[in-house]
Length: 318
Ligand code: NDP
Ligand code: GDR
Picture 1 (cartoon, rainbow, N blue to C red):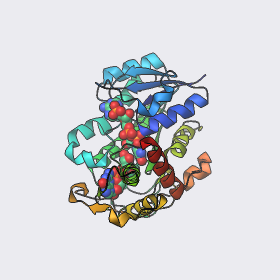
Picture 2 (picture 1 turned 135 degrees about the vertical axis):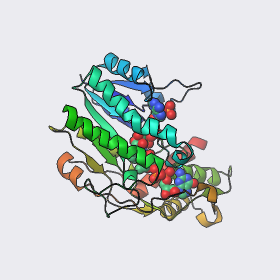
Picture 3 (picture 1 turned 30 degrees about the horizontal axis):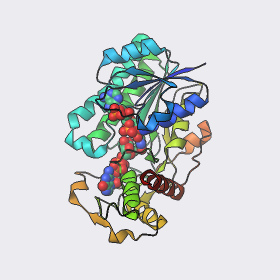
Picture 4 (picture 1 turned 30 degrees about the vertical axis):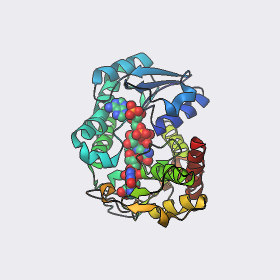
């Protein structure tokens, strides 16, 4: 039986990855920070199957102890301050967790279990003000937020530890991926939650920022499969994971409202408080390398994703 340690176990991706690994017979440890109130909603059905270890990416002692305790074959570093919008409000904290936290994790592995395979959750936000379209593994980075800058650091320190210490370390450059378990701050879930509430008469208006930006949106359940595949290869490497399609926020909004028979223009209000100091206008990934080497293919398309999220949010309020 293989053993995995997942950081960010309570988040969207942590929950899907834990499900996938448990299905495959892994023993799963989840690094979880202490919270005053429970935040296990995403993994409520798995609580008895996961072994939780208390820890924080900023505290290397807790990470080293976690690796010593779990003795994992595979470590998936999904923990981060992951909300781009907040990274301007908390730039130093974001750097500490999303950037330096990766080095803390790599050092803990180097000290406690250097043969463990390591996955780093890198991001299409590293491409930011894109230097070519579509973006692939060789596209230069130009991050546009403190979050993006921190992820570039996390990416390169992962590559550096692979090259310096011969560690099996991979960086997955994942484009936006969503699901009914997406945090409520992110635009997709904010929209689908609002659509459900508007349909049920609980809410009337939806305040949004820039609806012209374009993203390459996929389904989180498909993307965690790619993470796992990366750690099953003979050699460690970095991969872009994306659908190869891009859509505006406005298109997402249109489909979500139409799905419940509403006209979005009667409800959406443009609100400057949700505009960002610097925007990433377009992201479009080229997943050819992952398709060829990992034999990875996304299963859920854009329209199916939007409808899945709206349907689940409607059910949540019934
Ligand atoms: P979430 O925001 O849903 O989850 C983040 C997780 O990190 C939570 O479990 C959170 O715990 C944990 N965490 C935050 N800070 C710390 C810390 N200091 N120490 C330990 N744990 C911490 O993110 P996603 O699941 O969507 O994303 C997973 C990873 O992939 C992140 O690194 C994200 O930046 C990256 N990524 C995501 C993409 C996406 O589209 N979803 C695309 C590309 C990259 P808590 O519940 O306590 O807050
Ligand atoms: P993103 O996701 O920044 O791409 O990062 P988010 O859903 O926050 O924004 C996507 C686009 O929508 C625009 N937008 C709004 N965004 C939010 N959150 N709220 C709004 O009201 C709103 N109105 C318009 C944004 O300006 C942006 O253009 C996500 C995160 O999961 C990162 O952790 C991950 O690395 C990247 O995806 C890939």
